[in-house]
Image (tube, rainbow, N blue to C red; front, side, top):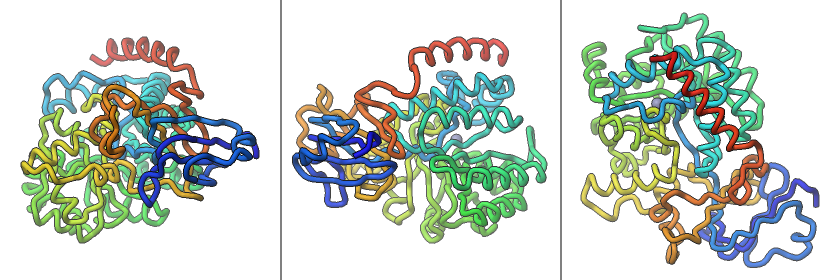
Length: 431
Ligand SMILES: [Zn+2]
């Protein structure tokens, strides 16, 4: 067996049949070769390049962070009690206006490391910093170095401040779709910023382009109550219904937030198969409200979880988001039976399980710590007791990136120091 094999043994493995415990997973190349119960055969152990002994651990598919903004990593802690629109004008717009590509590289890289160390193997980065190619290239360099699986939703607006021309938007999207079409870990998506900053014609045109390349459209919708009011004033219809009227709500669309949606809009989301990305911690930090997750799940709306950018969260810990999703969903309807841990975990993993031939995107979570012991129910321990998740090891596309708590791809201490220095310089220039 070659050196690119990784064996995880002596742990609980999440499969389609539930937890296999104890069990083992053998990774070969970029996919899972074998999953077995109890002890792996000695011949396998002897010929495996890397063996991870993971007693008292859970082995599961990597989590998916369905929405973040890596450009905001240097903006943590600056929300300062502002609501959405004030926060955008005071914090989120000035800092990107000042950031240089080298700083953006560091911000993106430490944001990706944060995701990785929190058990995320796949990130959707709604990429707003598009004003020069060097900024986008710097972010892509960070993605390459991180080893994570990333979809870059290329943000754009053609209305209002910092609007881009139709020609620039279309050309850049098309070029990115073509260039990154066959990369094993990196792809591009269409990322309109928000309904109030995008014209109907461009929403229709870019969504058609994305579909032509089998890519998604990923946009903020109804994050705050103000947006629903604006939509009514401008289009005489609520935001989700406006998108439906434009003909762009379908299974290729990520509706990010959907906090202020009524029953009718929920029905439309359900009928069209559009996916909601639920960014509940960010929504709560900005005082935007609580999206009706229970109704979405009950209606069969596909839902993923997202942290949103660090400027509004202020972290990218998807395990924290996962637990908060459960407790908020129960608190809002005074019912402890809604959103059981297994259902919630599927929102965070995209419904995936570990299986032979599946891509080797795997996380090993240590449950042998005071927060979790005793573990009566592994899923419950992961979702509800896993405070400050002890993510021990992470594999993406068959490559071991985090091994027993240590990053293998870069010097994290040096990265943190470089980020501290760069962020201080940036802040001086931005404000
Ligand atoms: Zn966002």
